[in-house]
Image (tube, rainbow, N blue to C red):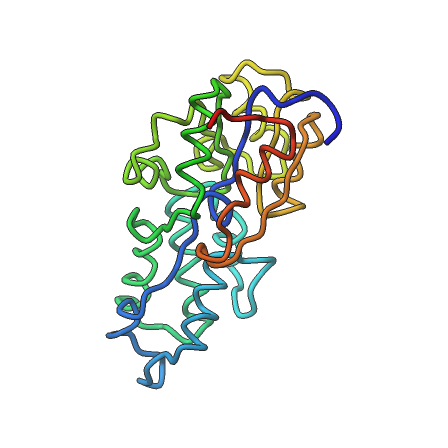
Length: 234
């Protein structure tokens, strides 16, 4: 660790605090354009594209391309962009595509990592304020509320509310302002070196965690904050 011990912590949401993990029953009644069921490999590929999209997916053009590129700034564009993604994956049936997309908006679809609740509780007890910075187009506060930890987060900087997308410094600043802590005394924790690591442009330190199945990452968040000098009482 270098620099001062952080006096506040910012977290990314998807792939950092929570993970969107598919369930078999989600695909039970869904069919592709040939009428075939989606096998496990195709299910996993679709969920991967939905959760960790990178760049412009093949087959998305015209107005759909605009919606995709602006999806995290507007809920309507987010739906349009993801329905285009599902069509490109072979799910042109609008009812089926909307049914799967709606899973993204369901708070119960998001699984906390093993130490998510614990790290938020420990930071609160240590009087270290927390903010969440997310490229997202729906209200993730409902996900936190389902786990009983919404009140442990002091600041939310959500792209569709702020009007900026990581790594734009404006979205990080939107979280820093209500915390009232200088950027060089703040740690950003996220699963993207490019997007979340953008906080370093303002002077924040950064800790990278990996987006893997929740059960495979038991202590990454706690390790990230303690490795930067934050200490908790037993």
